[in-house]
Image (cartoon, rainbow, N blue to C red):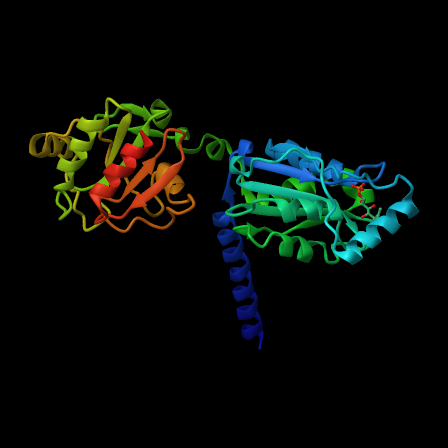
Length: 353
Ligand SMILES: Cc1cc2nc3c(=O)[nH]c(=O)nc-3n(C[C@H](O)[C@H](O)[C@H](O)COP(=O)(O)O)c2cc1C
């Protein structure tokens, strides 16, 4: 009996640990400039406004107050009456805000007071009219005494086009000014807005085959091809085509980062110098080659963690000669598997230059 209890305890402790590890891995990496914090707030005390400002401070995102064309009456009872009428009628009031360029944002916080157990109509209007395709939406609310009620559920319905709606946070309006830490912790559990996330592709330092420091920030404004290579692989002849790409497009702004890796079939044996000599003599390569590195697992270089965490290029590297293409702004635009079309790769590079 005791043993069973201990086992249950141990298993549940394990479940907690593995869940939190999984959560950490799932954090959305995002740059401050790509976060929008939109909110509606009505009362004199501006509870939701305060909440929004705290999110803005913690994330560095852009703050936007949602403004209904016909402001709600200042009188509480009159406001209640109008709000109730609109909510019952499913009315989305017109807003006066200038149109938002949603292409600029990846993460959209949407804040509202709890009105009659749901999201206030102006915030609902914002969600209903927003182009949320591919976005991560994060709702937040303040309330009188009812808690979240249907706020999160209804915001989710309005944001059905979003790629993801992360867990909402509701804070009692009267306590929101004592909740700075709670707000920061909630944000920290979902988003990765570290310096690394901020710098994106340009935040990494690599080492060249001959031991020199290579910063990805040196490649700002260039189109970059990152490829993990091996000298004894069926795909090794791709070195010729990669060198041709470099010859043809380097002047126009193409950079290549070659990362030899011995993790796939041990097909990159030998020292950095031996690998480099092989490539330059057998394939006349002239593009920058790095030191041999891991691209998967515990010892992987941070650049690969980043490359494999981007939308559309996720997942462990499967073999030698996997390629990532980064555009002039530092966005990872495409991943090519080892046998992927080199012609398609070339067309993409051409189109980005
Ligand atoms: C029209 C209206 C309806 C409200 N309905 C609710 C409700 O159903 N449940 C609740 O807990 N609080 C309700 N409240 C209280 C607000 O949610 C709360 O005071 C909130 O913090 C106000 O945020 P604000 O200062 O940003 O306007 C209501 C307030 C108003 C004005």
